[in-house]
Structures are given as C-alpha cells and as structure tokens.
Image (tube, rainbow, N blue to C red; front, side):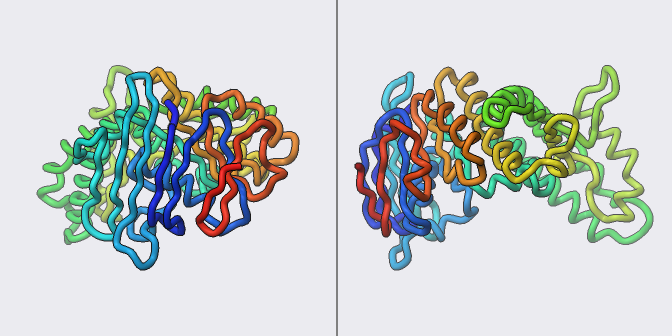
Length: 361
C-alpha cells in the first residue's frame, strides 16, 4: 500500500499543497512550526479520518476559512483508491472514495490503512493506563476497523451504569443496575478479547523492532481486570467480578470492573518500562510499538499500511538513529518529518517545508 499523490488545501497552515509521493523514504525537513507535522497529519487524516493530535476537526481548518480539503490516491493490492475529504470546522464532513460517498469511517479504513507515530506517543510508555488502553484500541482499529462498534457500545453502557451508581442513594445497589450488566459484559468481553488478541500480534513484532534499534527486548502484555477461571469465558468472568465487587461499587459510586480498568504491561529486561526505561529507551519503545502495529497490520491485510513518523529520531542517540534509519530504508514507503538536514537518512527523497509551503528537492 503506497500513497501516490496528495493534495492539501486550507489544512492547518497549508493553503495549497500538491505533491507526487515517491516510494521509499520520503522526508519533510525544515525548522519547527513551518508545517512539517501538519503535512504528515493531513496524509494520516486522509487515510483514517482522524488526527492523533486533536479530537475535534475545528483546529485542523486554517484560520479564516470554514473548511479544508484533502485529496489523494493510494495504490493497493486491489487497485488504486481515490480518497477525497472535505473537513468542516463544524458539522459533518464530506467523504468520497472513488467518487462515491462514504458515511462510516470504517468503510474507508477497510480500504486503506495508515499507522502514525508522534512524539506524544511517549505517554504510552511513561503515562497513565488510559494512554496504553488508547494505544491498544488504536491498534485494534488498525487491524480490524469493524471492531470499533463494541467499544462504542461498551462506552455507552458504562456511562449509563456509572450514572445510576452516582445518582443512587442508599446501601443497596440501584434496582436498574443489573439491566445494564448484560450489555456491559457482552461488549466489554469483545473489547478485552480484541485488545488481547491484537497485542499478542503486535507485541512480538514490537519486541523485534526494539531489539533491532536498542539492542534489548521489549515485552508487551495485556492485563485484564477480570481474568477468567479455567473453563470460563470472558463475558462470564466479567459478570462474576461485577457481582463480587458490587457492594464496593455502590460505596464508591462507579464501575470497578471492565476494559476501562485494564492496562498494558511493558517491560525492558526484568524492569517495568515506565519505572526504569531511560528517555531514549522510552522513545524507542513508543516508536517500536507503532512499528509493531504496522507489522501486524501488514500481516493481517497482506500489504503494508502507509507508515508516517513525525520527528522519529529526536529522542534517540546516534547509534539508535542509524539503526532506525537503516530499518526504515528497507520499507516500501515511509513518510518522515525531521527538523534538520543532519537527521535525513541517506538516499531519502526530501521535501523542504517553510511557512506551509512544500518544495520537493
């Protein structure tokens, strides 16, 4: 899978940018705040209909206008896919794939894929469990876009159940609580199962990538809040744990069991990565987790997703930079942003970015 060309209009600080995208390493280079990251973000948004930097679309639209436009074509094993997106500051966006309208994000995500690393991914290693859960969910979406439905259903049931617990007065459980338990457990088991399965695929690949860059082994393991007993499935295990902690939930007025309480265990050697890893190890770990997702998605769909890396070398020493650059150079296509010429890998195609203008070298 390869991005062939890209057009960006009124997205962030890019008024109008049109580029042919070559294969191999493609590096956007220039000082900070000139539009390198914005350009990569536009490419990722075109392929996923989402930004890893913001949750709302309004900041993506250039100041002074009410909508941005993204167009591009992706070469896939099944043929070329033309994607056109009108990003609106407010209201629903307009999306077309091969000139036909698309209503659901997953309809596009099943046709084209992108995996993106940003410096904020350091939070996956050093941040809170919710950062690692978000990474697991993003990995699920990268491999199986249709699996976002159980997560949305789980979140709705969780909000309703927590509202009942919060508003209830008295020592007994709210009378309507059990009515939500079935939906919560059914969708919670699906979310937990998908996360566990995706990390079983991503973990070894991330470990391989980390070993190649850092010379050590990164271990990845999903930690559930409702491990099943022998012969018990996930849904039954979650229901059992909810019953066991019901009195505590009534006192604390919140749901204490489910995927929203899970974590992803990351370790380097015998030590937990969050507590032991140096900044360079943490940076390499976050980067290699994304590369692991890329590898798992490639194996799942039979071709590589578009790989996008924002400022991947900055947190690495010279040896790790060299190792990473060599590994990236062996991929069919990778789009990178770096702040200076010293970080441009040998043999890469270069885009110079200044003030939202892009000049291929």
